[in-house]
Image: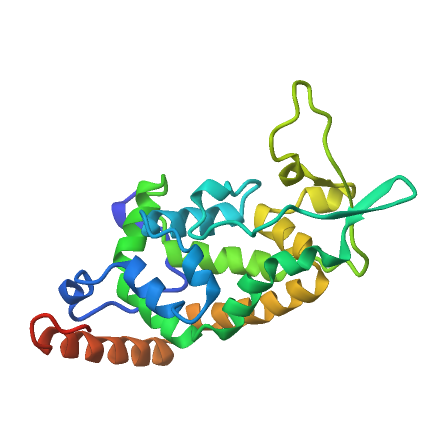
Length: 248
């Protein structure tokens, strides 16, 4: 098999930059902080090794487990709440309140600006993805794949029943993070899909509306991609020409 034949097909290419050296002057953490500056979620941003956190979390959301220690933001405050009815536990109706700051931040963020930022930092994100253990694979294709999976998450009309697994040894200090769905079909969902279901139906639908728009932008047409590339390159040129010490 030739080297060309072994290369994976890129389904959703990210537009390249005319001036990647200018992009390197800013970090993903700086741009994320700016993007979320008016949101309380901005204070929960984990800026250390953010490129790796972002790539690892996107990939893990499409798998069976997404460790919160790798998330780019702190987990939701307070504990996961359940309601008891006749000895059966289900996700509490008010549990969705824990996730409201994240849902509202996603609704308010400028997705077009987020995509321009994503394009700016894509070379670094691609390197992180390959270093994660996927050499020769294209991160943006994986991102779109995970978004498609999240958008296909089922929407239980009633709060799902849950239970804590049996502990062979002493119970962990935060046992509520280990609640499982009684329904085996829900248990079989990916980590990201299970998280959406735990948020509650209203939050799930709000998040999916924004994810659908994000997916459209990530998999945009060549003409849309060229417009994004041109707009970002103009910003790079302005940054490169800014006086020393000026904030880009």
